[in-house]
Length: 113
Image 1 (spheres, rainbow, N blue to C red):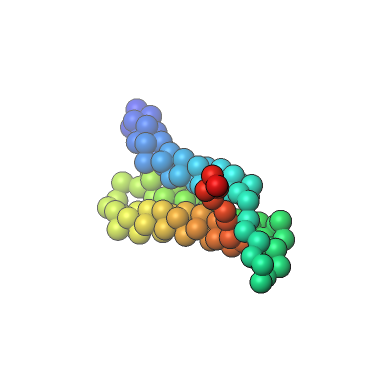
Image 2 (cartoon, rainbow, N blue to C red):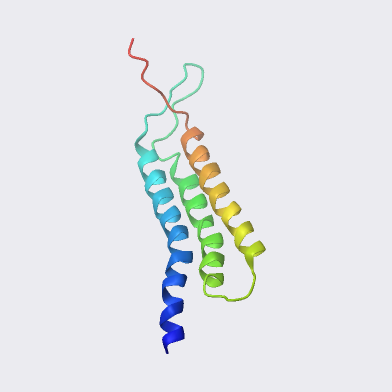
């Protein structure tokens, strides 16, 4: 019983960062929906919902490495390689997803002219 209670803080300590990364990335994906898009003269303006599909795709893909990290967080065996690959995938999907969402319809930065 005491051994089970001692493993709970370790489980939380190993699993909580992955959940925080996913939640922060989802928040950023949601906030990126409001960034203004660029309308070039030669091309028609993108539709307002052009960023929804990449946000849903990459937001869903974040669940795969997170599930691996959650499942291996309670393991006592040396699965450090699996965890390392899952962390690389989690961070990579988060960065690529944010880039895909921001650049899917173009975005503008106010230059203050």
